[in-house]
Amino acid sequence: MTQTTFGPDFTEEGILFRLWAPLHESVSLKMEGADPRPMHAAGDGWHRCTASDARAGTRYRFVLPDGLEIPDPASRFQPEDVHGPSEVVDLSAYRWKTNDWTGRPWEEMVLYELHIGCFTPEGTFRAAIERLDHLRELGVTALQIMPLSDFPGRYSWGYDGVLPYAPDSSYGRPEDLMALVDAAHERGISVFLDVVYNHFGPDGNYIPCYAPLFTDHHKTPWGNGINYDGDRSEMIREFVIGNAIYWLTEFRLDGFRFDAVHAIKDDSKEHLLHALARRVRAAAGGRHVHLIVENEENDSDLLTREEKGEARLFTAQWNDDVHHVLHIAATGETFGYYADYAGDGEKLGRALAEGFVFQGEHMPYRGGSRGRPSGHLPPTAFVSFIQNHDQIGNRALGDRIMASSPVDAVKAVTSIYLLSPEIPMLFMGEEWGAREPFPYFCDFDEDLNEKVRKGRREELSRLPGFDAADLLDPTAPSTFAAGKLDWSKRASSEVLDFYRKLLDLRRHRIIPLLKGAGDAVYRSAGTAVAVDWTLAGNSRLHLRANLGNEAASLGSKREDGETIFRLGRSDDGELAPWTVIWSISEA
Image (tube, rainbow, N blue to C red; front, side, top):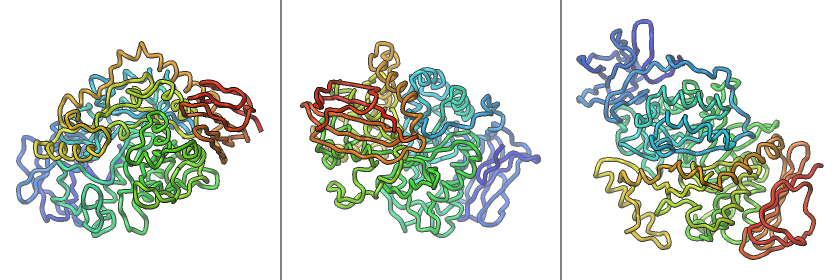
């Protein structure tokens, strides 16, 4: 069993309970069915107690001097939600079937983002196992699971978690999550977890009652920043870094997606993100472990490569810029930040060839510059998609791109992102054209629920065509239920065959060329775009596409190399509407 700085440990003398509570001189341990017992003040703010009568399954709380009973901040399981007792769990008791699993190279990744509660009707880890064969046959090689840290209430997107070491009990027990990871590995599927280290949720976070978790030195969209660089910040940093290592080692995860890293404020000599990446990679040993960031600032420095092309810190970034240009092409929407990505094929060409559309230029929606140069990075430093939880859920009705966009347009943008050298990521159900919405949902007490409802109305009222009467109540059980996939519609879907064809083509023709991918060039003319990538062995991958309702020409009648995929028509160099042509040529 991996030893961690936080949480209960199994020792020869019994269970060692510990709490870092530097704001109090004394703390008690209260096990269910027993009287509180004082903990030993061990110095540096630590309080410890070894209980010979505790065992796996024992439920316990810590008691502060004012009588407040709190869960363990590093609880492994919360059977009665965030305000209830913590439970001792012997994670070493799980018997792994895939001890020889070492992961998969990054170039092989086809990510599939899912929310455990909505992925299946049951909404559990165990139920998700039953759908893994579908994903394997589709061509998915990695799950991207939305946050699991214990959150308040019956349902949540997961970004309001407050107990980062405990998978939420509504999805099952920790052992069930282990079984899901194990079953995925049996099928050659990696498992990534979305983790949130930029804020804690508004309900159930007791840490500020006994430790300096926050600092007013930094501000974030959620209030004061987490104390990563102030007085007594060393242990806060250890709590978070240790959490990532815990998921990696105990649950054998293959990597992480780090939520909104631009909101992690730290003036330390070594920024938390750098320390986190360094230590997680060290803990991985010889396994393939990949670290993905969400970064609104488009800071390409986080994606720096070593001389051999290996990631120095983070493997890749979610590329919102590719999403935005493809979304505009398919939907015609140009409101809000979409307006800055509208126009011709120029922005799409730049996003596919260089990663970011904005690389330091002024972005009107932001009112300032955005991004840093990214053209020197390989295409695999970027994760592309036409849907994800944010881009669907932060719409008034949580509607998917398939719900109202023309079929030809959706097929065209799909064939671009799935065959691009960037790493593709599907959103659950996309592969069969699911039309269930994925609205934002949460479940707090009524006071917080009303604040959420009001905040959503104010935020979404700026969208064109917004009607408050149509807005789904984010706190209602029916809103959560609306986001659940209807798997019965998979069988009659023609879209599924289209996705399978594209992913099979990617597996056999694109992926073998991605290791050591080099530079790319692009050009555009109206709605038409041409992109040429240099890949492994100096092979060349070529895209010719017209994402518009009128024919367009790139001024060349010649098609490059062997055509491996064609959607639409091309006559004498003129591309018909919604035409996409992929080809490969040898050096």
